[in-house]
Length: 85
Image (tube, rainbow, N blue to C red; front, top):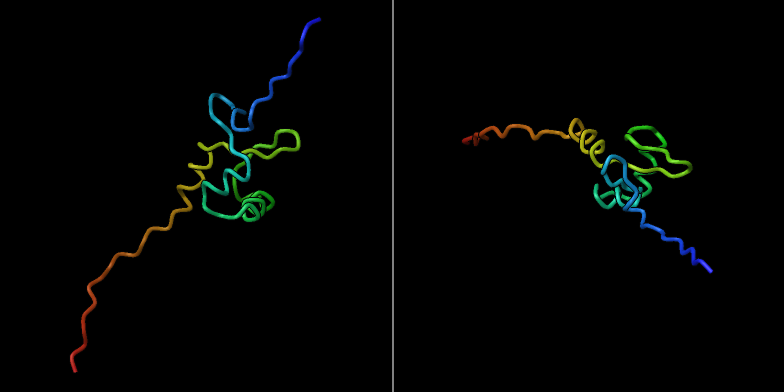
């Protein structure tokens, strides 16, 4: 009798071109936002994602590219002059 054990891999081993894809929970943790906010970004198509069957996955490289233009640079600090009375 031949044993046919099925080996399942954790989600974090799913990869494309050697890049580990993130699920919505992992992306939310990485960005420091709620899972609900990530779902809203996907629904509004404001973030790059992959649809694999019914699963949504995120490529960390694409997320890094998406984050770059989202950065808001701080205003330059000007010397504040004090008014004399």
